[in-house]
Length: 328
Ligand code: SF4
Ligand code: MG
Image 1 (spheres, rainbow, N blue to C red):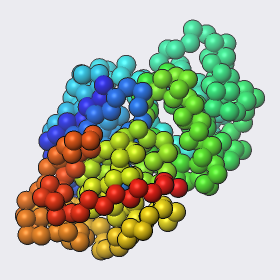
Image 2 (spheres, protein in one colour):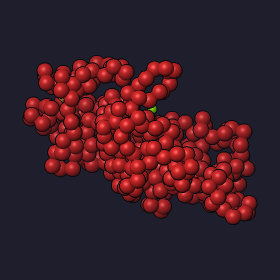
Image 3 (cartoon, rainbow, N blue to C red):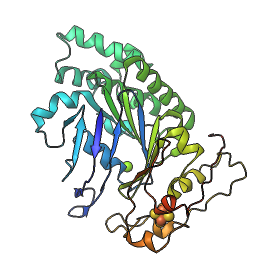
Image 4 (cartoon, rainbow, N blue to C red):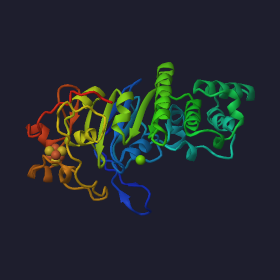
């Protein structure tokens, strides 16, 4: 359905002017229709860049991004327009992404009009009311401005706006991390219900493995622009293979460890501009050896649906250490 193919050598300008960041390099994953795939990693790992590449906010310098088998990476704006309608993005901070001077109804009506999805003003209003209801708000809320809503309600408005273009695929960059825990759960439940109702496919981008475990079918763990591990979420949580995945899991305070020792989180995240050679994780990895310092590990299938890029796992140096615990 959706395939982001290696090898990428992206030189993506991000943030600092003139500073060239090789943000994602050799990422290869596919997302199946109707599933929720999550990309997880610490900030600076390149996960937001992957999201922007997918929705066309950045172009990759090499490699391909396929949507339903068609490479969309090199498409012009005009060629991309019908695909853009079907690929929408939800951002972390709903307030920053909603125009404060527009009434909510105009915010939601904009994509409906831009994509010509309603034949009259009345039809636009009806559709806006329907979308507000669908996200748990009321049609009269359309008359208010974004600042009149709570953070969770604003995220509902962002979701309604994303749904207005009748998309198939939503890229959600930290959709709940600005919200209180109880509100996070409400928004995730809403998104799950909408997925069932509308047959949506999701890509979640998050730094929080504990949050994505509840909502994902599969999870990709990213480290400094590369995928360390990709696995079905139950496998990732019950039997993490990559040392970095274990380190991330061990930061979840409520995770039941079943007697297993937590792996201490060592060291700082290196500068992504100059990632360490070999396995980029080697300066922080308790299992690193000389091979890890020079040779970059490629993803390998484990035989139970996971892909792991680690010499230590391949050689059996990293002990298989199932958690067998309960996810909080
Ligand atoms: Fe650790 Fe080596 Fe595996 Fe990298 S390749 S995670 S350094 S054991
Ligand atoms: Mg980010």
